[in-house]
Length: 301
Length: 286
Image (cartoon, rainbow over all chains, first blue to last red; front, side, top):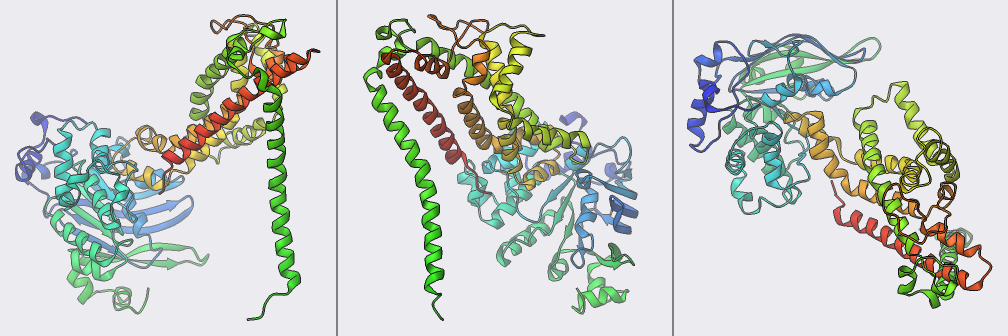
């Protein structure tokens, strides 16, 4: 998608002003109604409105009846025991599950009011607005520079690539560590640096939302700490949904927490269900559901 | 801890020795062959061999037209087989839905095709390319296409392995950045698979270079005193030239054949060395 300043939406322009005067124009947000015109950012705005979401792998229902709103410029944490469908759930949000043969979604996910699974929605375009960081750092076998430049290049973003790479690495708090070796292989970086590179790569396509699927599970505590600081920094400009196994992490960084658990039916098939979602303080201090309380106090899971 | 019984340990040693001797036997055969061929061909192993055309007088005969023929035939074969083979491999690995019966049928048949004897491809080339529907004649193009059919399954199989070795996390990473499937393949998967594809293609072509049987049927067994000038030119290749010389009664031609075998082996070894070099130089660790 190629954009010039003339048809960039107002929010993008204001956004640019804060970042840097050299920053290239980003693409406009997708058609989202009046909301995005009124606010420079989407704070308090509902970014995802998910209702009665069921997810199937073939005939097997992996996630059942999830209804939740994700608000803009917040970090929403998704917690729960292994196999409860947390990752499956967030992969519905950028349509990564479309890549799995036999995967099927029922129910509705609205992204800024638009049906994410509508017939005229292109999943490629969805992923362009809703970025994703994976569990294990997965840099491309290319230079640090080319890793960051890949997204803008495939999306046809016309910008001064050097500036865009520098800015993205700055925002991912990696610039100072790599500025002298941009042409070196991304594999020369440590695990934590690789993960921040993946975040920079994601930021470079100027997404609206960043999905993180257990981004720190392969990292040591120091690297984890850096990513958590970074997330708090990033939520000023992005909406973040993070899946985590680590309840302390959810408590430290997130604004809202959704707790998923597993239901086992008569055929001993395991289906993920959303138990409750609320402000993080509330979930960790006064959960309404007994299952949540059991999980966070360590009696289960 | 108790020591294992002497019998147990002897058995282990004996087995190890047996395995080593298997390897030794193979190597020994190769060394004997090489020494004998080099020894026999040495008197004629000089530039005249490369410079002169075949001749009825053994003294002035050379393999020039066969060497150029080999370059033509294998070169065109490579130009045809690499794109087609890699394309087929990309389809099978990246696009094909393996739950569909026709894709499984294709898979099984590629394995089978790799095991079909070379002469059968020669018959196919004769019946379909040189004569029959395409009626190309006994020319370079027919020879190249026949060899291409012969090594196509090898290129497909090795390319598929190279493509499969690219971790899925790379594809997911590219998709998550809004890349299309083609962009993902073109910019991430294929570049990462190039070392494996190159290695496999070189090995497939070195197989093609040594083939004589299918080309004999395609008119490669001709006495040529000129180099091929194009796709429509008659041709001969090194293995056939060797075959030709060896079947002559004069002793001098046998020497000539041995010298040509050394040249062919040298080409083969350098191609395989190139394959190993490419593999080691560009090998990726994930």
